[in-house]
Length: 100
Image 1: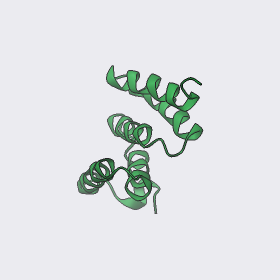
Image 2: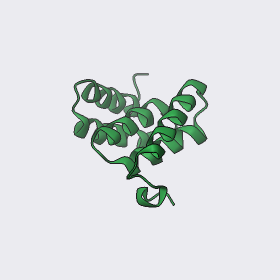
Image 3: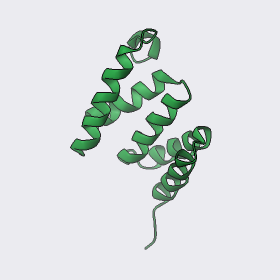
Image 4: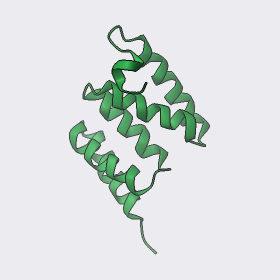
């Protein structure tokens, strides 16, 4: 069989992320998680890409998805730390993130 479409999209997104092309990373990684919701690595790099582009509310939501749904304990822990750090930003509130 070959590589799944979600995995191919993830690879494109991760490559863009690694090149600091966060706009392209968001494009591909968001398609990957639509194609396969439980692709936790795609959610993780999507969250970081949102953060890097100042889309803190979207980053918050992606990290929440990982923290609450992922089975990978390491990713859950990383998401938990990221959420804690996001909540510390002086301008960030859950209501402002759209996650209320």
